[in-house]
Structure formats: C-alpha cells, structure tokens
Length: 259
Image (cartoon, rainbow, N blue to C red; front, top):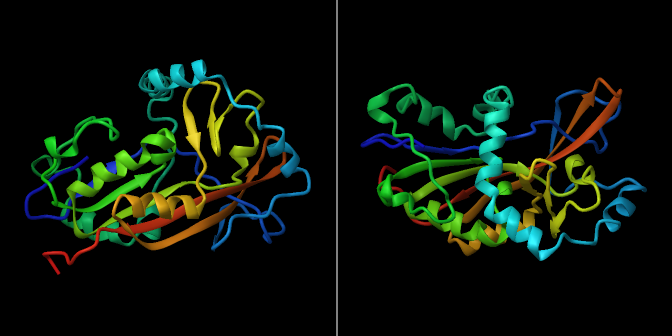
C-alpha cells in the first residue's frame, strides 16, 4: 500500500492472479484476444453436467479449518512461488487509465511518498496506516476472490473509509464460468461459486450482479462492470483455454476536493 500527502494515493492489494482468457465467438483460438461482454460466456454442452456434479459441499469442520488457516496457506503459497508466479502487468495502465496519472505523480520507488504495510482487510482498520478519506485510487486486482464471501463486505467497507469522495476502486478478478472454475475436482466446493485449491488457498468466481450488489452495500457506486472474455492456448496439451474475468470500476459518492 502507498500513502502520501498532497499527491494521489494508489493503494495496491494484489494476491495471485492467473491472467489468461476465454472462448466465445472467438474462432480460431487467438492467444491473448480480449472481448468485453455484458454477460459471461455460454457453457458448452458438457460443462453444465460438470457443475451439476459439484453440488456436495465440504464439511463444516473443513470450512472452519480452511478459514482458520487461510493466512498460513497464502504465506506458504508466496514462500513456494516467490516472485516467479506473477506476470507482467503492463496491461493495468492500458485497462485502467486512472493509474497513469497516479504513477506519474506518486511513483512507488520514492520512499518519501510510499508507506508499505501488511494487513488483513477484513479486520485491520486501514485508518491505522492511511488517513481517512485520503485515497484517490484503490486497485483490487485478484484480491477479493481470496476472501471468504461472508467477509467481502467488511473488506470493502474498510477500503471505503480511506477513499476520497469521488475516489475510484479499480477491480479485476475471476468471473463466473471461468475455465479454472470448471477444473475443480470433487471435494473442492466450499459454497456457491467458492472453491478450494489443492494447496488450501481459496477462490471465488464473481457474477457481475453479485459484485454490483456487494459494492453497493458498502456505499460504492458502479461506473463500469463487465466481463472480459479471453482465450489462451495450452501449448503442452494443444488446447484453447477459455477464461472469464470481471473488470469493473466503482466510485465513492461525493465530489472530490481536487475537482
């Protein structure tokens, strides 16, 4: 996270991402081709059967255990993958033009303008490190999907407190019917659209309706909220891999003091 006095502030909260894309009306398979859509991709004839077989949820004991060990599992993830997991994110300034101004005025390499700290968005009050109502832009890029759905609203309320009136939240995360959602094996489903990976880390797959309601409940208004359909090639298996992401912008009501 970063904090500054008199400059735009860019709070960055970014756990792991699997940045690859989706397949619908994109033929033949074109690596890296994006398409914005107001609806998620259509499932193939076989995929609804795959999802219907995953009705059984894990036990309450396992649910509680995974919640209790969430931090440990993510710490182990980062220890195991270090910096090798993350991909080039030059696309962020292409997709979110708001970041260009923030990075020009508030370079993260400048120690006088950067305050890095670790926190749990669901329980640690950000105002202990960031002044209330001081932040212009918050990025939530593959972050919220790692939070238990019951705690997502707490995380957004926490962010809203430090966001300026007129400030913006830039969001990108896993979308409903993403290929990764269909790959989970039996015994991985924790709840509706919520799954656990083999390493114990968890992932939620968002519908635009659920996301819009979630942000609205935290007092944030939708500016844009669309699926990104992307297709990539699994060269090892020679397959086109359809991916779905949700890319959105939300703002805090009220006029910015800088406007």
